[in-house]
Length: 355
Image (cartoon, rainbow, N blue to C red):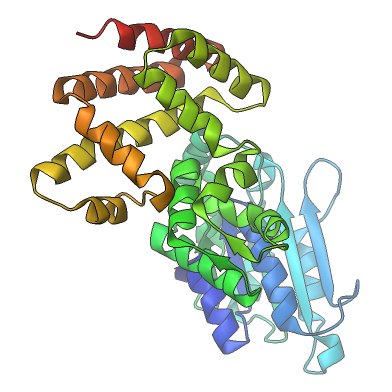
């Protein structure tokens, strides 16, 4: 069984215009599985009908059997109108395991799969990231063993690098004649953090928002992704620098009312102060202002203001502020959202007490 990634497979079928007899999709980022199926449908090139593009579900509502599905897979032939794409969506954890009859039917089919059928086994579960990690260690591992064959391609939907995601965004926008700046992509990565790949789910929304100007820049990204403009975040950090608790708390309240999660605000603050820390390091090594702006992906319209802030920020203070924020980040991840809100409100007073 060959293993590949989401991006690797998408690039492959776009280039080769063909797909394997059996495809196994799994991963916490299960929405990417639907993207794969959609791309297969596009490359398939035929009008989708109930006959040639069917989906079976293993859940609590439908009763399907592997014997029935294998029989359907074997029924297609070389006539274009009789070729098939069959998707088996496993929606319940307990349905992952195969009984004895299912194991036998699958094993027999794998020995000689129908070349005119593509059978897609799609593990699509509503689980937390931690629960999925445990599931991957046992049940999905066993499922992969049952479908192991030279004719099977397995896609781990969670194996994706930042560079691949950036290239995908660029290509997506290029195909639609939309210009997206490097700064905008970097800002998207900054906002999405560990969930960067999920931006693929939001690309149609970015495309629609960019329609009037056909351009997306870094200052557009905050409002497009979070629904709130970047000025409020900038104003928040400015209030911290002025140690103006009243303004800080008002902006924080505004962000909370508009649905911005504490984790997003904390992540933005970490990124912001880390940039200040990095800029101070680069200054000591005689980097020019322009080079610092390039390295840190700071837009030109705020670069001068940012550089002035860095020059006036004491080394001791930036180190202590970062300690406070990292502690805040840890507490927010272990104590819940409401606790994180309170900790963010207290953050301004902790900064004021730094000497």
